[in-house]
Structure formats: C-alpha cells, structure tokens
Length: 253
Length: 253
DNA sequence: GAGTGGTCTAGACCACTTC
DNA sequence: AAGTGGTCTAGACCACTCC
Image 1 (cartoon, chains in turn purple, cyan, green, brown):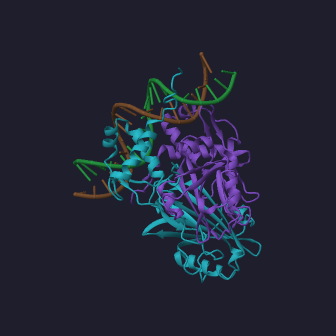
Image 2 (cartoon, helix red, strand yellow):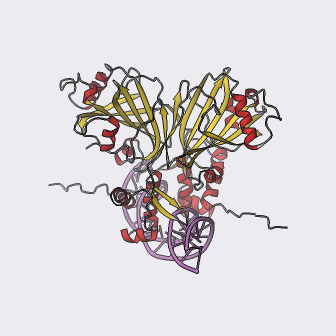
Image 3 (cartoon, chains in turn blue, orange, cyan, red):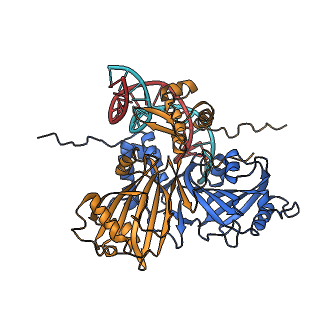
C-alpha cells in the first residue's frame, strides 16, 4: 500500500486564513460592519501581522473588504454593476451619459496615444478629464484625447477653461458621425492622481478601459477610463448585466 | 517666507523603486531578459527584500514582469489582445471559436449560479470545462453551466465522458436560437485549480468574464471565464482592438 | 546541491482619522 | 492622545527548477 498523499501540497497560511475569514464574513458579519483591528486579528489566529495582511489584501482585491487608514477594515457591499458600452454609437458627452466633465486642456499626448490616434506627433490634441459616480461613490476617472481635427468648430471663445471648456469640446464632438468603436479592458494600478480622485492609495488595482471612437475612417477620440477594481463590475451588452456576486468562480459540487 | 512645502507627501520607497525599475526596464532590458535575483536587487537599491518584492509585485500586476519560482524574474512581453464578444450571436462551440473543450460533467451548481440561470435548485445542469490558448500560451479557463433544458437532444450515448461529452453538449447547443447575451468583467483571484491550469500561483489576479446567453426568453447557458490578468488585454468590438501598450495611463505633458 | 522566488516572523516607525 | 492601517526591516525557512 502506497503512502496516501495527504497534504503533499500544504496550502500557505495566508491562503487558509483567507478562506476562514471569507466564511466568517458570510456567516457572522453584515455589510458595513467593522472587523477587529489587524493586530488583534493576527493574535487571534496566531500568525504574524504581515501574514494576516496578506489574507486581507486578497479579500480586498476580491471586493469583500474595504480598508481605510486611520479608520479600520469594514465589510464591503457587493460590487456595483457599471454599464460600459451600452448606447453603442454615441459620442462621449451625448445626452444622458454617465460622465461628468471636470476639466480640459490642450496637450501633447504620450507617444503611445499618438500612435493609437494615428495623428502626427506635432498635431494639437485636446484632453478632457471626466469623472463618473455610481451609487453616490466615485467609481471612475477618464481622460479623453481629442485631436483638433475632430472638433474643427471649436474656438477660444467656446472654450474658456475648466469644465466649461470640457463641455465645449464634447459639444463639438456631437457634430461628427460616429462610425464605430473599439474597446479593450485590462488590469492596471492607479497612478497617484487617479488614486486621489478615486479615494484609493496609489497602486491600487484598477480596470483600465481604453476606447477608440472612429469617424471619417480615423480615430476621432481616444478614451482611457480608470475604474476602481475593488468596487466595480463592468457590464456590457443590452440588458442590466449578469448578477452573480461574491464568488462567481465557486466550484460546482 | 513660508517653508516651501517640499516632500510634504514623501512617496513610499517601494513606489519610487517601482518607478526606477520601470524606467530601467524600458531602457536597459529587452523582452525575455532575466533580471538579477531579488536578494541582489534589494542589496543594490539598499532596501529590504520585502520592500523590493512590493515593487516587483506591482510591476508583475501591470504585466511588465514575469516571475517564476525556482527560475527567476524576466521581462514580460506586451500583453496579448484577446478578443471577447466578437462574433456576437454565436453559441459557445460554434465553428471557429477560440476555445477547446476539455471535460464535462453533470453537477449541482452553486446557489449564485442557480439564481442567474433562473432554474429550479433541483434542475439538472451540465458543466463544460474549456480552455483557451493564445500565442502558444494558456490564457484562460472557462466553466459553462448548461441547464438540461437547453440541450434536450443530449443522450447518454452522445455523451460518454471527458472531452467527447463536452463536444456533445456544445453540439446540441447549436440547435437553439441565440437571442442575446449579457456580459460582465470583474477582477478576481485565481482559485487553486484555475491557477494550476493557467500556470500561476493560487490567488494571482485574474479577469473574470461572466456571460449569460439568452434563448427562449431564459438563460440558456452561463459562462464563467477566467483570464490571466497579467498577460491579457480583453478586446471588445468589431476591429482588432486598441493598441496602447505599457502605460495607457501615462500623463500628457 | 545550488539558486531562485514564495512564505513567515517579530518587531519598529509612520500617516492618517477620530475623539 | 489614542487607535487604525501602511511601510519597512533583517532575518529564517520552504518549494521549486535546473544542473
């Protein structure tokens, strides 16, 4: 008889800890409730604080917990579904879109953006910063790159500064005929300014949605939107979105 | 004269380190190249190994680095664009889709899946496991939940076991008329089995794509696909996808 | 067996929020 | 001032890969 391969792959402590905490969150805590502090929790489970933190970090990544410096760790509400790419064939700023213009400027975009815009390196580009709220919370920031050629009617009078300038750029966009759009989603980490806007620490995980709007056979607008990965579930398509929460990957029995 | 508020917000060491390393990757290393080991790197920068690792973890999260236990840390190639949701109105398993059937079984799905399927808790559900390759690398695993009602023609003879059974389920699906689909993307962490399939460690960040396929006014299939977040950029829409690499969020000058 | 990244410890101090 | 999470250290040992 061979040795029964028991625990040939012992799981790490933080992994087991995460499982235990996850089950405790289901059964013993309710949304918004404050957990014991990290030092107490670590002592209770007989591990170093760093190990406990590794488990908490994973749970926060999965949207189960929310941690705030100086305050504590709370049980997070289920992720909010945020619609992306509904109302196909609508320009940014079209009536009723979920974004709020914040600011605008004229700038020389980074090389990668120039390549995607297929403009010359020296062509003037307007940037528009927008933000998006959902359920009373800031969930995303966006930076639009608009080549001057896409908004030929824009004048200095239309676009004084700040939010007014942003609105003027968006208004001019509506004159173009939208021919299509391209979208990509990837994982990123929040830059310092985005982190501030999203009330997160720099480096926290974000979902970066890059959208290219096409008109007249060119890229007329490039949008780079940064969503909080901990609190957002991006939904695509016609209806309200799939409603599987908490553990979409849970194993079938 | 007031004190010039210099370094009122001193950035953490690991953050600065990440920036320095990131620039070094751009200028001094090429894709596939092996970095010095963590102990040497930490010594070179005068920090503890844990601090260095914090920086490396971020860079790996952003898809800049790839680390493998027992081997070393290498410079990662740019993320591969993986098409999701092209060929709208095609069932899983339709001709030419990117997935490869692996296995199939009949199971009682978790409660959250039952809710999304809108089936009774006791209704029989087939599961189909598939995997997806891209550029010679495994990029995703998928678990399909197919209520028995969606594949009425399926018989035990059609579905012996394993991959053959999976193909039989998919084949039966094609008889239905697809009426629409719903899709959601969120951040998750790899479960142990998914991690093994994707050649990652348990807990590594993944993009979870949940798709609900509608037919006859009900959810006919539910798909939960798990993509490697470090190497994948999910693309949506008509054309090949937006091609901004490395730092899509970089600030305009 | 040598070398790599992954886990873990037991401390310390800092930045921030709240009272 | 007290209490929280965030950063950082200097070690140790383990799991894995490769020679």
